[in-house]
Image (cartoon, rainbow, N blue to C red; front, side):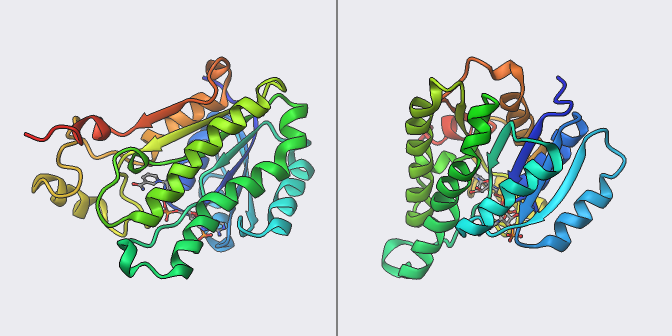
Length: 256
Ligand SMILES: NC(=O)c1ccc[n+]([C@@H]2O[C@H](COP(=O)([O-])OP(=O)(O)OC[C@H]3O[C@@H](n4cnc5c(N)ncnc54)[C@H](OP(=O)(O)O)[C@@H]3O)[C@@H](O)[C@H]2O)c1
């Protein structure tokens, strides 16, 4: 697969899946605007990957602020001459059951996970239409297999799926494809557990012990699927919900 010169914005690029996605896309030759609030992290990522064939432009943006999302799009056009792909990856979670979930935390998740998709997509839309572009949203397997005690996050990721379908239909005649990738459990700051801790939980059957594959996934596993959607290989795929989860969703139905 080559993504040479493909002009891509990745939000939430300062850690976890976003940083892994920037790395893989740039290795495939893409030109990537890496956006998040922690600019120092983005600059470090770009410096570490200065040797790759693609390009990485760090950009500070809060994706819940309209002016920031517009500035992010303008910066990508300025740097690359246009935008072909938007990866709406930024997200956050406060884990709590409904009775102890503060309204501010609930709204915070809706802002980071839902409002961000609206603002970033709306800002990039003229470019995506012009270039018959692609939107990749990051959902979660929890939308259809909700674990206990994660009400707000589950609600927000359900909304991401619904928005993906609505947008795929609204934008399909313009040649714009919109899909959602649903990662299973990937060690990251969002989950607050290291890979070793995730492995220990896996071994004891807590958390994702019912996942079909025994391997713990990492950011590159999700990035591979995103990269495929960004390229021509995914040209007839839109409105799709794609699980990249090591069989976690499958195993969640295994009650024995
Ligand atoms: N890890 C998993 O197991 C898993 C599973 C399913 C789905 N996902 C989804 O995958 C995506 C990435 O998660 P992750 O695990 O990689 O988490 P992470 O390591 O915590 O990364 C989240 C990223 O989002 C950015 N972000 C959060 N709020 C933002 C805002 N207001 N403006 C701009 N950037 C913001 C953060 O950057 P700054 O703080 O620098 O802004 C960070 O780069 C999320 O949408 C998450 O819901 C993850």
